Amino acid sequence: MKTNYFYVLMLLLFFLGSSAQSQTLTAVNAKLDHWGQKPNKKMTKKAYISDFQVLVEVYREDLDYKEKREFRGKGRGEATAEAALGLQGVDAQLLQEEVDKLYAEFVADLKAKGYELVDVDRAAKTDYYKNAERMNGPNVRESANPGYLEILPSGASFMVTKREAEGKANNKDGFLNRFKAVGAAISGPNQLSKDLDDALVIDVKLALNFSESGSNWFKSLSGANAQVKTNLMMGTHTVQAPKKKGLRMNGREEAYTIPTSIEFYQGSGLKKIQSKGYLKKPIYISGVIDDTKSSAFDKGAVTTYTNIGDLYIVKNTYSTISSNAKFAETDGKKMADALYKAGSAFIDEELKEFFD
Image: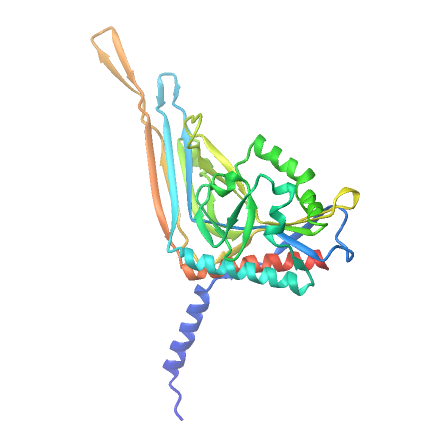
């Protein structure tokens, strides 16, 4: 039979092209730290999932501001640059389906290890949750962390604070947020474990992030420079967002630390277990979002002088602003698939480390 080499070549090029466009993930570089006792085989075979939250970044802004400058009669006015980048093609329903899959497999894995899961109704009766409210999945909503979607899995119920239930709680950096975190580390989840007859309390947080922001330092010497570009990854991510409320000085931004972690708490007193799993390096994902960059640069208006008669000179220094917004084309199916693959790889690695 005569071979059609042209047809074979076209098929080869097609499959190579398809492979080049598929999403690829870097290796999982995870760590599990322990405070207090390490996990052991004598732990009670009961577990309570206190949280399983997924955040997906879909929009990011960057802001840069330079004050007016003058030296020996020459200078420029105030300069502000704003850049924004959003994702076009994100499918919220597909993201929800993959979060549901991650949660179902997580529950199945715990049961396969011989753990009996504590029901949320039982947890709701503890003193630890006496001021809490119930929040049910499925749920996709805008997060209080700017630029993120917040997703809760179907069939899951969690006890949360009133601010969390209303969608007002965030991960903004600051003294009060750090103080709350320290308080929780000292008495929180281990007290819950004690209230649940020493059940293993597990808290899961996943963050899929796409933005990489920051100005060009050389351009910033002569004016305001803002920039956002795509770089899809899963891992703990710190983002800057323009301040919207309260005292807002020019160019003021606030920082938010979006976590990717899995935490384990069991027992109390000297025998308590506190372990936290996290990624030492993010899981980077390619082939999902078109490489896109949004940048804005503004030098500020030059100071001008106008003579009025022979005695008076009027000086004018203008404030200026430059802005630019773009959307990056995104394959919604590939993004949902990347969320599942990266999340599953991280969770599996940490469960293996903890239970082994």
